[in-house]
Amino acid sequence: MEGNEHAHAPGHPHSPDHRQGHGHTHVEDEHRHRSAGARLKRLRHGLAHAVAPHSHEAADKVDTAMESSREGMRTLWISLAVLGATTAVQALIVALSGSVALLGDTIHNATDALTAVPLGMAFLLGRRAANRRYTYGYGRAEDLAGILVVAAIAASAVLAAWVAFDRLLDPRDITHLWAVSAAGLTGFVGNEWVARYRIRTGRKIGSAALVADGLHARTDGFTSLAVLLGSGGAALGWRTADPVVGLFITAAILFVLKDAAREVYRRLMDSVDPVLVATAEGALRSVDGVIGIGPVRMRWIGHALRAEADIVVPAHLTVVQAHELAVAAEHALIHTVPRLTAATIHTDHAASAGADPHTALAHHGDRPGPTLALE
Image 1 (spheres, rainbow, N blue to C red):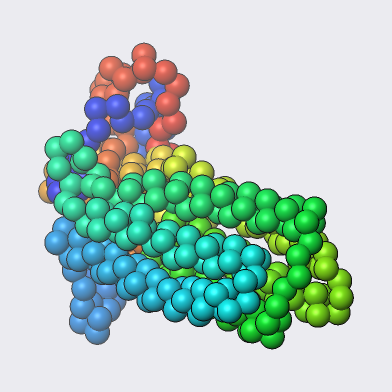
Image 2: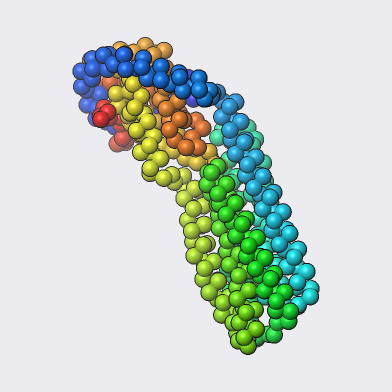
């Protein structure tokens, strides 16, 4: 029973014992006596809309997604400017001091700034409307950008390890230690600020790629801090201080790489937080008139969530009434689940006398069907 987002997929899952799951027709009688509660709930919801009006039309959902992309782009531009200024200051100190360690850190920061390019392209591409080939839109471009960010973090770890081992085998004196220390501190502060900004925005708009890029900036900040500590050790006469600290920083980068890679991998594999699924199930059960729920599925499309869910409604409802319940169920999901922009709701009915309408699907395997448990 569908309309708008509520399309009936041909491969709708039902188990062979689906007829048994739709027993308990006495539940229908129980729900016929809930009209007063339903009217009260609709009244409360109407007051909420009057205080904070909003819409769930397709155009408004697109506007929300585009606003998230704009916020992501704004974060990228600002962080690019900060890292660009940091890199310029460090490059100036490199020219004065001839510090190879600071040169490596400068190149590192420049590389981190340039990771904004694939992310920016992904955000721009994600704004394109869905079409007949890319029916879910282009939001997955963010996941591809996330792969590039993870690759950049891995390259950073390799570079840090290579520089550390090179300096360990061939220690070098550093001149203008105070200037080098100031440049290292500048790099750390700039990268940490950018990291916090990217991670905060990424979590706010649901972009795993932007969060991963923020973690990348944090690793670069640690590398800059290694320059500071290394120059301090050199000032005390310990020539191998810089490479030893660099090895510890390499280990820290590898830990961050593991977290970022896990985040991007889970997004590519359509992983969602189980808490979100439980929240969605609770929202569906709270809709008056829904007497059971079936499978609930979610996936990230860029930094927006989409959901598919089955609900069981009383068999005596008309097509229009059942569709109204599907709309109410989607409405409840959008209100309850953060970052959810759309849901496809399939309405099923409690079994009555006669043949099970899903018998034709039984030979497609043991599929989980809806349940009637509301409480």
